[in-house]
Length: 193
Image 1: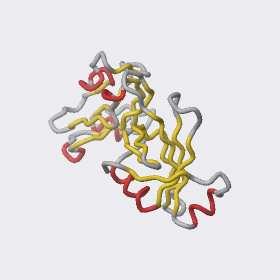
Image 2: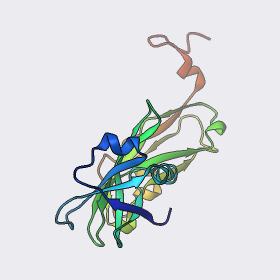
Image 3: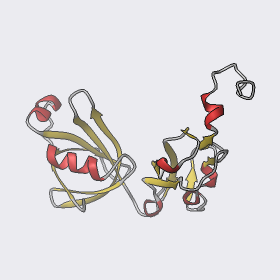
């Protein structure tokens, strides 16, 4: 999605009524704005946005002829009726750091020989807009049993342009031996042989 077209939302419009009519209420906020902008996008555009991007992704919004370079801060989704409820955007400014999160994507899960435990799903960080990450991919192919990957091990977070907002020694994932993982808590897996 290159450019998302949005419209200003009427202050008298009720969110529930908008959603019933296929319109998703949104807001654009940021220090560069005098006040937050209440906007709306149609439901089909919101669904395309959800498929193509995620919280932490950059998105360009066009509202009344003005283009805003933004970060998707929150994409509120209801799994009860499979619908997008609300989207919050934050205006980005060149040279100013912003807080965000990067989703961790794992490749080749089927090639893991042991039991995979993913302990972190998102990594909070701050960076100037051009250095923000919305995803970090870890290829699991060839990682042996006993592997533990920390946030500090990930090349994407070794840049001095990115400020981690969590402990770099936090474990993202580990691969354990199946035998040990299958052992019941409180039992010695070696004794079971």
